[in-house]
Each structure stands twice: as C-alpha cells, then as structure tokens.
Image (cartoon, rainbow, N blue to C red; front, top):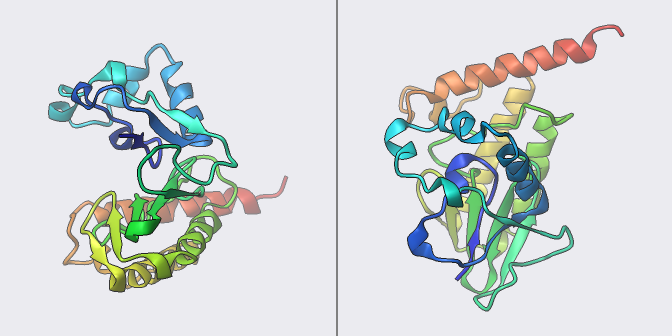
Length: 219
C-alpha cells in the first residue's frame, strides 16, 4: 500500500493511524510546500483555521502532511502495485499532480475536472495562473484517450465520455475568467451544487483584476 497527496491543501494531506506506516508520496514541490508550512511554530493553528471544527477535532496532527516528495524526473509511484503515472503541473496549488493508473484506465484528477467545483486558480504567487491552469488541462488532455474512469477530488466520478467534456468545461471557464468574462457554467449558476461557488468566482475575478492593474501600472 502507498498513499499519494495530489496537492498540499489540508484535505489532501491527511492520514489516519489505522492506515499504518505505508509510504506517502507527492511531487517534490508539494512536499516542500507542506514542509515549509510545518516549519512555522504556529502551523497547526494556522491550518486549523481553514478546517470545519468538527473535522479539525478528528485530525491526527502528528501524521498531517508527512509526505515524501518524488524527484522531478520520477515518472511513476515507486511501489509494487499497478503502474501509476504522475502527471505534475502547477494548476490550483503548488506541485499539483494527477495520477493515471495505466492498466486500469483510471485518472485521479486531484482538485480538477469536477462537476461540482469550478476551477480554482492558485492566485498567490504564480506569474500567470490562467496559463498554468490551461497548461495543466493540456497535459491531462494528452492522456484523455487512455482514461475509462475519472475520479475528481470533489464531485462525481465520471466515465470515459466525461473526461473530455469536463476538460472542455474547465477550459471554457478559465478562458472566460482570464478575459474577465461571465462564463456560462452551471457550477456557478442557479443550479450549482454548492451555493458558495458564485462567491469563489467573484473573488477570482477581483483578484485577477487587481493583478492586471498591478502589472499594467507604470514602474
């Protein structure tokens, strides 16, 4: 058995003692991001502030984020199970990755290709978060023909027919966001699964607008 954290957000680096001492992997950048967070003497309090209290009470903090970063040239997970290809990119969070379980045709997408969540860009540091997201979609699109089952981190599992449809939907949203447009996307409309999605969309629009203002300002 082995674990893999697709990216360094709190809900993707959890572990339970009952899972034992199996190795836990991630991309090198994902592991470095968690390591930096844990180096802060107040890291538990900072992270707990993002977590619903009922969940925070159940977390094994001693096991939180104890992951091993795989070298950048590593193409797959080093274990005795099925061959799993690591598709690293920089969309959504530093060191994000999707996993392709090749002989089973299963794509584990992390926090992408959801039928419930819009694409949420990493707007903290990247020079071009829109292009980072589009580049990640292109990488995933390159293996779409090998996928029979799509497993997003949040939302519904999809079949082979859903892979390209969700890639196209995410791409259309990100392109509209980059153009400061209003996407025709049911995930932020009146039938949205989560009523807080429109707020996320508005915040992304505002943050991208501020970035454009800063970049356009004279030096």
